[in-house]
Length: 291
Image (cartoon, rainbow, N blue to C red; front, side, top):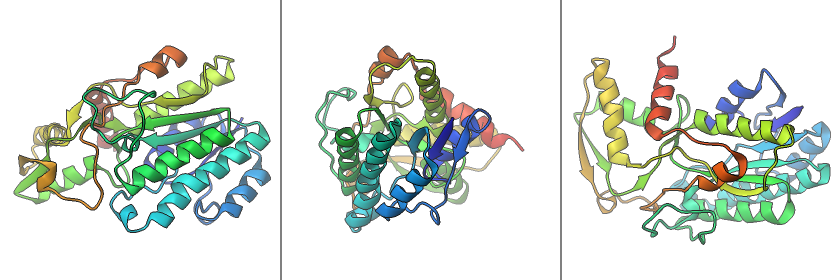
């Protein structure tokens, strides 16, 4: 089976490549061959290579920059997603697409389910929601997988930033009033592989939108504490951590205070379960420690 994965060097894309390369033929175009800001290039690539499955793992993820560059954010996160959906429908090919907790405003007191009404606070969240809607309108055979707080051993993410700053600074102030589930990109990739295998073996449940994050919850501050403890076990000198509120750390884009996503529907419909966030972090750190 031939699988097109966009976002060649992205966090989730790279973990997908590790897990899928031995069993599938992967199409992994770089931006020089598949620029998601150029609609015709997407159409030409898909029509030329005719994949059996499309995984859109690319996204414009610069949350704060999106506030001053909405055109690019919507081009990549919304318009490109819709084009992938149209081309998937033309080929009768399923589409797997990753979305975000940022489609919600975070005002709910409990974890969000797929039935909750989105209300994004930022341009990034608005562009991702527009992408979800474009896919749902154009392609019946789709899985939109909302995830949150993605990190890995490569790219730009909270884990790597904290590891660097904890070694460099005497003190770090970290937001403590935003709650979510840090999710290793490897967890997302492993669950995606399970979904592909169920589809291949005729185990398709319902296409549609699902939540896919690590289990459990924590704050950015508590997440940073666990990262710090891991560094201390390596005898690294570490900064002291100071909890602060979101108001004390203003950013161009507003963040949802509650990013918790209920993943029960994915388990009930597809039989795919998720590890708790601490287990995912330990697996990621073990990967990072390998020579």
